[in-house]
Length: 357
Image 1 (cartoon, rainbow, N blue to C red):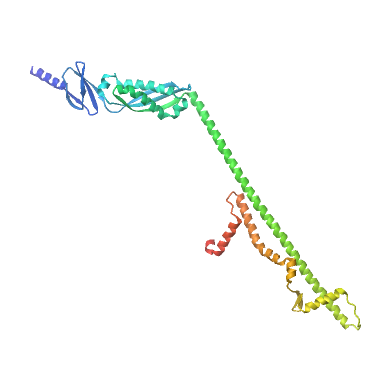
Image 2 (image 1 turned 30 degrees about the vertical axis):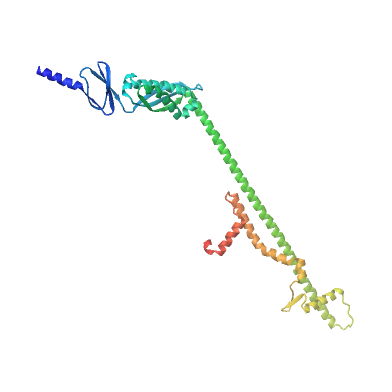
């Protein structure tokens, strides 16, 4: 009897003590009547006539099975989601709903289908955050009555049917090809414009160089012609004067006392006299040479202008070479360097030898 009494006492004490974990709450009923929610720790309850129901107060994850839906533009899609919930009021979760996890899962499934049915196909694929917000908003009101809070809803996948996916892939491929063709055409157009612009500038520079070269060549020929004519005239006069002197010598040795001189010879003798006075020609080492042109003759022949032109020839040749170099640079597609820039660079290198090195 003592052993039986001891067993009864131990069983009674065991039934009176209820230990609740820190993350749990337990609903207590006595004879089927709700009494209270047991807090974490040691709780003493009526023995043998009690019953407890445990509620996990941590955030729980509920998988929403894949659902099929028809969008507003009659495109079939399938989608699944994850719902994160937490029990906020264990008493209401115990008294207001039977198996709150199953209730939330079923409600999330119907809400997911309804939200997808109110959207077009492109929106279901692109506006994932909007779908999540709508589902959570639809779940908040009924779950609040159950003492449950929906913390987050995440739609994992939204997939259209196979035929729709194939059509979308073809559309995407066509769009990419179109963009590639546009970009390629724009690149070819840009390249053609650049080449045409380069050829145009190269031809202009080359034409300017040829024009300048022809002008300089014509000026050189004109100068050469004038100088040759002047030299021939001078040499011819010296030859005639020499012959005239020989004729006068022969006349002086003749016995005749009367002489008839042609006008041309008289003119030559006069000019020879001017030579003797240092007018037109000068004698050096026994030879006659032309003196400097007088101011009137130089102005008539334009010798001063010819000297300036001759002095500019070398500089102009350098400019032509620089222009040719610029034309080759433009033809190669590089940035053109103007003649002035090249000349300035050469002058800078002449004044600063260290820079050239």
